[in-house]
Image (cartoon, rainbow, N blue to C red):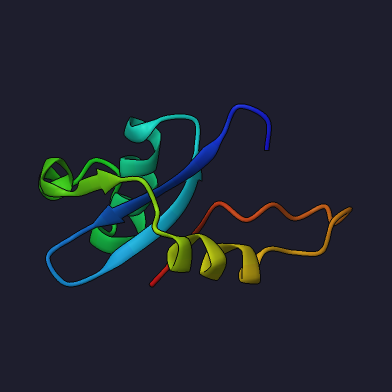
Length: 77
């Protein structure tokens, strides 16, 4: 997880918690999940913010066990 942190990205009706290097990368990840394309024109309307405790906990609950080869990048909420 070096150099990455959690962001919450909100669309009009849904939100995503993403582990990313910066807000721009988090917005691209969320655009893929919420809009179907990281280059969707609506991407700029997505709001990026720091996660609240419950959002952070939800992300951590979905993470694979330590030592797993899989790394979780984002979850829809």
